Amino acid sequence: MKKNMGALDKSLRVLIAIIIALLYYLDVIEGTLAYVLMAIAIIFLITSFINFCPLYKILGINTNRRKS
Image (tube, rainbow, N blue to C red; front, side):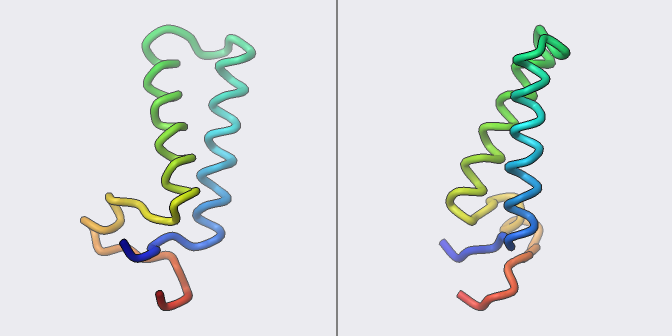
């Protein structure tokens, strides 16, 4: 599994996940929308920590500037 995510991409994903979690905590989002967004937030966090996005692999996208 080659790394295909750059630092900016990882940072944005973590930031989006934190924003979604805060919106849920503050009851701005609720119900089905909240569960869908929380699932997306968890996926964003996991892909950020492992530096690999399966969707990027399928689409041929690589935001990582370093060759791995």
